[in-house]
Length: 146
Ligand SMILES: CC(C)(COP(=O)(O)OP(=O)(O)OC[C@H]1O[C@@H](n2cnc3c(N)ncnc32)[C@H](O)[C@@H]1OP(=O)(O)O)[C@@H](O)C(=O)NCCC(=O)NCCS
Image (cartoon, rainbow, N blue to C red):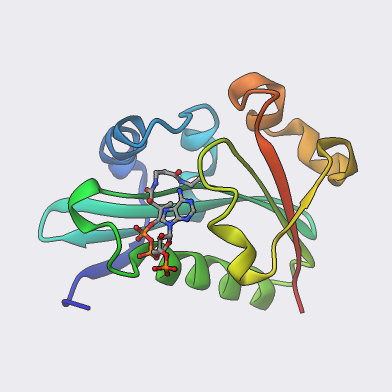
């Protein structure tokens, strides 16, 4: 993989993150509130990939996993999810959930399993994704961290 710059997001990155998520047709609700928990990948000044987690105690909501069209299939999404999950486990998180309408078949490679939305931990219900940003048709997945 080329030498891209990896770093955590700063408040001034919001516009670029929103641009990448909009291009990937992913929701923006809650991004500003949780931006500090986003990992970003830059090619020069250009944001080419991101992934974030909303922490709710021992449970996290993985969200906003997006790779620019021009860099898909290069392993960036997988590397980003690895990074976020490793950091979550190191921080004491026990479970990670996600809601997706577009990539339910992407996440089982980490051990995510499809569950009923009602089976997700209650603490996640405060997330904007649960409060309407993600449609009812979204698939819920849950991963038990080792
Ligand atoms: C899903 C996404 C993040 C994958 O990123 P990526 O860097 O292109 O993926 P990687 O290079 O890490 O992995 C490629 C593999 O994932 C698979 N894959 C890519 N997108 C997929 C999808 N939407 N559903 C299922 N599998 C997918 C590819 O077929 C490939 O499979 P292989 O390893 O068997 O060859 C990217 O396609 C994207 O930004 N999609 C739009 C936003 C989105 O749907 N995000 C997920 C919900 S938060």
